[in-house]
Image 1: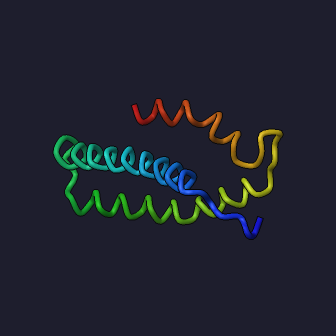
Image 2 (image 1 turned 45 degrees about the vertical axis):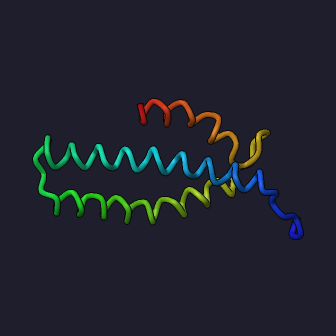
Length: 95
């Protein structure tokens, strides 16, 4: 597997999937920033601190989730079951 190279179509597929997730997250960030500042009434500095704290928490939980996924293997593999079972809740939360 060390000598295996991705084809151009595989690279485009991975890039398109990553782009789709980033478009959704960027859209959500725009909407939530507008909501927090204009509707909820928080100051922009408070919203910035909120987002910073969330990113710091994410910096800790992402490696922890990586360790969890490395330890468990199901009949679908190590990661596929997360995609299968979390796609619906993710889609609902984005909607």
